[in-house]
Amino acid sequence: MKRARLRALLVLALLACGEPPPAIDPTGPVAGWAHYGGDAGASRYSPLTQITRANVDRLEVAWVHHNRDVLPKREGKTAFQATPILDGDTLYFCSALNRVFAVQAETGEQLWVFDPQVRVASRWTHRCRGVSIWRDPLASPGASCARRVFTSTLDARLIALDAATGMPCPGFGTDGAVDLRRGLGPHEDGDYEPTSVPTVVGEIVAVGAAVIDARRLYPPSGVVRGFDVRSGALRWAFDPAPPGSAPPPPGPDGPRYRRGTPNAWGVFSADPERDLLFLPMGNPSPDFYLARACGKRSTTSAARWWRSTPRRESSRGASRRSTTISGITTSRRPRR
Image (cartoon, rainbow, N blue to C red):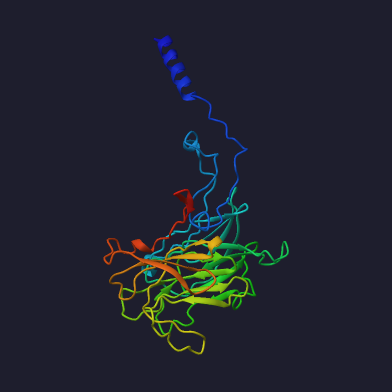
């Protein structure tokens, strides 16, 4: 009896040992994740090869970061929806209340945090889908704001931060921020909320916003604007009004935009080689029908093309997700 038990224990011990884990090849490719979708065209592709089907089940949690931005239920809902970007050895991301974090990717150590102190309660769920980063090719190494992190806030600000310190870049807008409420006309808090990632193409940072288009007939405009990455100056505005519509007369703070036009709250994608920015558009007020995707120049407000979806959305908001740029070959010709 004792020998049988010993044999059984020996068999169990051998089964528990199993085969040794496959070795990890340290010579594989190295890559970051510099954009929300991996690259400007949102391909969501990574060339990394160290994690495979043979070893993915051996992954373990290395560290956990808690941002703790959760509101009491009576003050609204919050959701962490950010996709971190990886630049060098640092992860950058934002919380539901628009705080921006820089975290050491290997250890999880928090390097800095920036709190914009958002002043408005969201009409929807408080969220921030991510941030973007830009390297100034003209800046000296180690100069302030040579690398900039761009983020937008629920109270309609576009902010530029020094990627090294988390401090606002003083030469961008006013004290590092641009007021996106300019030109929108009178509206209530929460009517206009940038929730997605500002998109950088060349020396332009473009931003849209979610607009409360289903609750009133004349909400704020769904205008998409491009700003200078260094100064924050307005370079162009794409106001998707009906063709031939006369723009409203300018106000004391600059151009004004037509109310109730379609908005682009989703994540943009870009083709820098062709100087194109792709916008997943939503519906005009009162959010009854029609959504479209639009392709436009990243350096001007001119639209190159647009395509409408069927005039009855099967899933509200389905056409507003980010577009993906991919390459194919047809008749021996490469196309995108």
